[in-house]
Amino acid sequence: MTNLGIGEGITEIKHYVDCKIYSAGENFSMMNTFLVINKIADIIPSVSVDIGKINIPIGINLADKAFGDSGKIDILLGSRIFWQLLSEGQISLGKGYPKIQNTKLGWVVVGPVDFSNGRTNTNQYCKLAVNTLDQQLERFWQLEEFPIKRKLNVEEQKCEDTFKQNTVRNRSGRFVVELPTRDSPEVLGNSLGMAINRFGKLEKRFTSQISFKEEYSQFMRNYLDLGHMTKVGDLPIIYESEENTKGMYYLPHHGVLKETSTTTKLRTVFDVSSPADNGVSLNNILMVGAKLQQDLFQILIRFRQHQIVISGDIEKMYRQVLIKENQRDLQRILWRFDTSDPIGVYRLNTITYGTGPAAYLAVRCLTQLAHDYVDVYPIASQVILRDFYMDDLLTGSDTIQDAIRLRKEIDTILRSAGFILRKWMSNYKEVLDGETSDIEQYIVEDGDQHKTLGLGWNSKTDLLYFQLGMEILDYNLQKVTKRKILSLVAQIFDPLGLVGPILVKAKLILQALWRLTLDWDDEVPLDIKITWGSFQNQIAALNKLHIPRKTVCKDSVGTQLHCFSDASESAYGACVYLRSQDEFGKITCRLICSKSRIAPLKVISLPRLELCGALLAARLGAEV
Image (cartoon, rainbow, N blue to C red; front, side, top):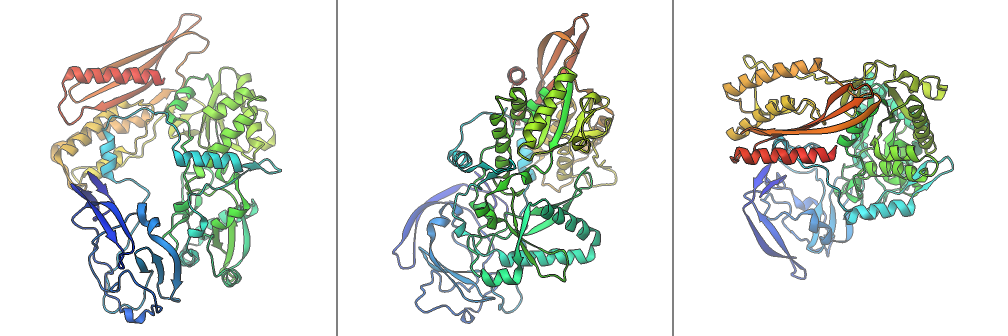
């Protein structure tokens, strides 16, 4: 089996062993299964430490009395059993010194030291919330599965129970939710020092980037003015009165600029996965919850069926949902608008982007709203359940009157809980005309090209389009590698398979690279370079491609679905067309969607691949 994350990268594991571990005094033992690899990590610590400078209290029985000596790692105990080994008891040895933590294996020394001698090796680790290119490539030609409905697992059911039992709505109608926790907040260590350090680095950046500071301050001012955060006090006072910060968590934060945004150019990101001094972060103790988002494929299929469509998104969706007051100390941050002021301590009062259950809680509030109003607005409630993908709405109707009524009902339901829909767009201007000032500010000028769940849509022409800013690689001048090719192909977002025949060529190129077993940064052979150059020219033409959004003709009196499939020795695919006919006998045929698959590396007969194509067509037709 393959393991990713230990042994300096991707490790092939061929053996495992059952082993019993004992504490030094042999009063504790545990049987476990261990995977066998050549190397776990470099020597730790990277340089020997003079442990004579660490004053270990008398009577403390250390699990490793030679912990200061550099040495190789023999066994790595994972998080599955980590919490079982912890015992009550932790002693701080003072500022600049580590802590000692009691465990069932004995006391262990944990934390930084700043009195090592000689040269040291500095290891810098960067945690990225992305998958490796290896994983992306493997998934690229694995047989893709259609969405499968499954039952909630134990943790997801606990999240649902927590929501049902503890969620309330305040006087203004906003939802007040409880963060679902798998562990007590008491297990959180001290995160204040880490937050102070990160805030210092942020302010240092402010000194060299004045415009960045101004935008950042404006973002935080908006957060404060809207009541989404509240000041607790100033840091010196807080620090003196709360030496024990157990049950609290300080979030470091940084800014991310997004020039393409039509609303907020800068977004402050709160680092909820940054560990406290004991290695535990807020996200470690939070449950994630079930994935409640509707299937993107189904939403886009329905979007193409309506004669009249409406789109919009919820303004600051997460921040419209409050969390219970007794949990807000889990979302503390440091901030000040001027360096001459003391550093302020604030609590974030709403769901914070990046927390594990944020998406679940926000979407769950929407579904609860739909259920609450199903008797008053049955159609609008059904739309809220079916046609929202997170905060984005894509829906429609077949008459202007129905579309206007639907938009107003959805707006009424959402506003009752503080959710404001903005960036309204429609292919019929009348749907958005004649509105009061409270909605005029949220209407996008018609004719504006707009990304709708990643798909380009021009509301004036009612056409779908692709807008690819792909870098063109000149293989005569540039080194073309497997990494560059995959990263460029990944930029093409086509959830409905509208340009499937073009993308299948990219998949074949990637499969050819896979057969060659090249490393990511090796230059590809000349024949693949030439094939890639030809493919790039075809991709450039996609920016000129426009596809009608509507798949059903106006005043249709009959519709038919036609599914096709075919296969070759290298690939197979399926597509679905919708044939509609109006009262005058005019027939319209539109491509709804398609999917393609690359033939597996193992040779399969053409008849078998044709069967795979037929099965794909049947499943695709069933999804439509």
